[in-house]
Length: 384
Ligand SMILES: *Cc1c(COP(=O)(O)O)cnc(C)c1O
Image 1 (cartoon, rainbow, N blue to C red):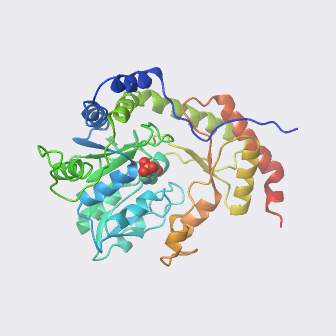
Image 2: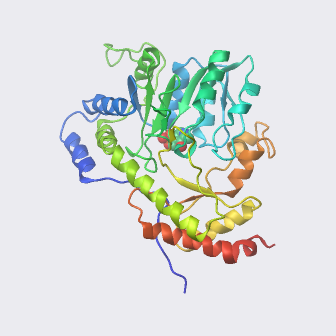
Image 3: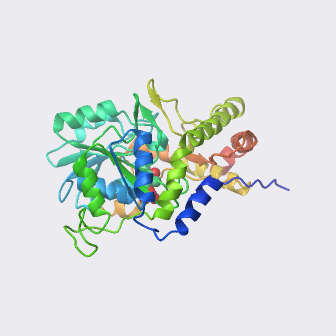
């Protein structure tokens, strides 16, 4: 008989405070565009030190409106990394632009800043660094290159709410940044996203574009420009406001869980590659717990480990399959070998259970099963 644990990959952390805030909205007439929208935006903007915050219905919408606000359009290129969630690479297509991929650094898993310069050409309009798994990219280098070539910087900070880079919050270093609130993120509104910026034009444009192109003071049926419905309801904003108020506590719980893992891996499976230590002056906000099988292990073996853990009732997944190898990117001409570091890391990576209330005992179970598999099953899983 095999033991069946039940440890999910992620889990939202909703307390009575969020529930009460949502119920309070439900008792009013303002289910959308009410007072909770500016309250949420103000709370988040203050938390991260941004002048403006514009809430929208997803992180993907936030990226779209950032690109529009930065004037990215038809025929432009946006430099970004293929080791990310698909939205960061897709968003440029929404505005008629294209991503130009740059491979990643094998340790930070963020865009390799030494390779950005070589990707700049006459059509480059912006750099879109992704702070992968909550670790800020090397923003000094990104911003220096952007300045040299007069490019916009749009930070995909959707995985990095609360991360710090040299005293500034991730998302507030470039021209604008985005956060996302799907239930697996550090904080959630069910679905949701937000744009942060110090740039008044980008903020104003986002406010109009999320609301059918209406301008301030315009009536409900007056539209200054082509817009969208990317609004976030007051029900969700109320939940988000409370989650932001709890952010410090949430980030501490997540850092504690990462600590449980680090200790257990050091003791039981030291060869497993755990998330890197941030460089001096950088603090990671823990989003997921993604490690890698040691160099030389195959994708098939990694998939074997995933199957083993799932068999034991342990949630896990392969974060990230390279974006350029997704079917519709292959149709554009990308293929294996284009971004070797992304492909190698992607083939050996595994996201393990990670959520606020995860216990030291849960982390111990997960690590034990990884160790068992490494000791017994690793080669077996790869045999023909
Ligand atoms: C979560 C995420 C997004 C946005 O996701 P939505 O599901 O649209 O909220 C964008 N980029 C990255 C890197 C993400 O992890």
